[in-house]
Length: 401
Image 1 (cartoon, rainbow, N blue to C red):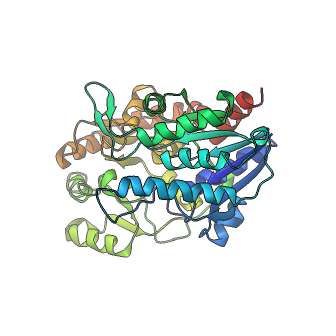
Image 2: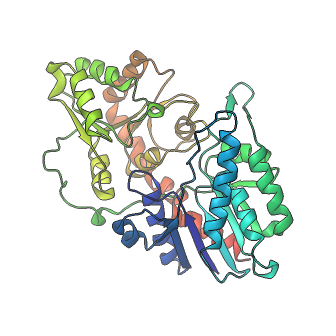
């Protein structure tokens, strides 16, 4: 058995793809599984060295074409599916039916693209293919009352139908790490889609540095980590943080943003009286420094949009649960459901108004000891159930029968 991991989205350090690919490499090595990893052709030498990946793919799963709003969706699907198939053919691998090809960030383009690729391989040498869905199609609309998703499912269904005619059922496996996304994809594909653990790894304390690389960092009570985007509440966070700092005069806040321009705009927004209690870091932290910063926080604020995180998971939440950091999250999201299921610890707010989010943040701050105690109790269970090692063990067990 050999794992062939196609991580076409890994082209920089600014996404979860880097740490996920590191975790694939680590888990497969730990379990003595022969593994090949292929990544985006523009990946840096550091990424190549750390992941043992081979630069190859031209496009990421989320790339689109913007030329004609009427035809862009279909045009992008056809173009990128064919490009993915072409790149897979150019891998020039000597495949066998014992190989396991894994696409960790699958979209409709990869599903259909693999069907085009399989046509070029003799039937007796076609591998088992595993698709893992992390995100739904961003154009789909969610009916929360009926717990139903509406939209164009034709691209996924076409790829799945084509694969059904090319590979036996035992050689095509679909997974999603969000139970509601798995349920949705089962309907979309008209094929079984099982639930799988998240692709994430957790460093032990001896793997982390003793000091921050940035010695100017201050202790922080509340942190906002990861990319500073609209879907993660960036439009309301300045007001939330201002209100919180005015109510909690002895508390500091840490905010991570991507660019210097974002940092400057935020700094200018905050009143002078609270600026010295808010540290804004722009740029990408090394994974170890990111985790060290996370572990130094008392609370993690996650005002994510419900419609974006209803069917998606969150790597930031997973890390908070693994390291015992209480969170403040939006009602109706996957994070909310995890808290309700007994994983992690935190406070839930009903809507994304700045006043509602700030009230929840103050409540979490006031009840910190209780929240931290609960968060610490659940760390081991979360780490055991949600990790790439758990995922690799599951796949090896199911596919090696």
